[in-house]
Image 1: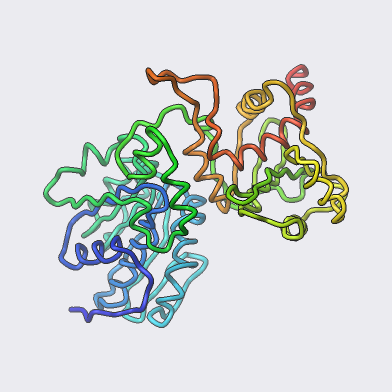
Image 2: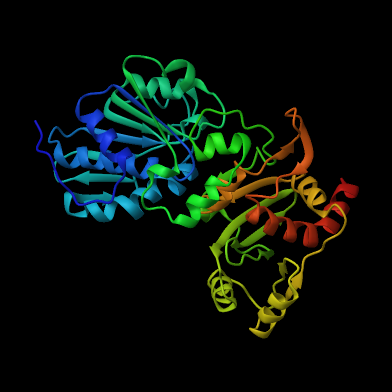
Length: 392
């Protein structure tokens, strides 16, 4: 038995349709969505609504590939966008175990399952697998078989197990969404996504199953923010944005052949004073290098504002490809809070010719974080990297 709860929330059709299907007992719901469709937040709102209105002490599990993924994704989205609207319906939040207990007695937990054996645990009422295209199928199978209802979401850059195992089955409801379903997205962001071309447009602007090949940095890994080596020797780098493009500021540390990267700003139209404030808030000291895109006026303004070590990044013929090649010699970890870097990583690809053959030319889009990273790596670490390789 349950009583419908009407919480005043900002939502999209993804929320209303998901909630309707779950209330009517749909066994599985698949959300295939493009970029910024809002699917994760709206799924979480639907799950929270059910936890608030049901009185059967059921458990809803939200999971993802790894804890950094869930902490920087679904858990952060819940804390930032969902929890404020449902606070009156939640009796406690165990931040250690990441469990929200509702006044109804239902629980919403955020957990990670390292392997198939770990997934063979207790039954649950509902399961939500976030970014399922990065999730191991056998782990999913064990969790799904112990759940009354299952919801998954993903960006359809490539076909994966959901297309073979779930879609087309009578117990599965498929929703395809894109940025046009998100009424809270800025017009500027809508225009940016609509400007994508080719396969990127099909996948990220329309949520269609695609075949996005040639991702430039496919093996970078996410880590918890607390695992970023803050106290090690570090540099900062910046790719300036103006009216339409964002300013991307990166903090990076190289330890041996391992590069640690942290996005500390990603914002359009940042004035110099905001750049200075963001840097200082993220541990910048005046004697630490700040490698900048070549813009003499901006560099002069930063120096006048006290950032005397603001320096033009090293550039030369072929420096973009040289920077990419150097980055690919490192094992790279980036923090879970680096959400724009995470988004750009799936969009930063090699150009293709008319026959679809990959060219050795990176697309000049969705690369603001990567340009900033490259400035630091190519300027600061190229010489050291060459010495390391000679000594190896």
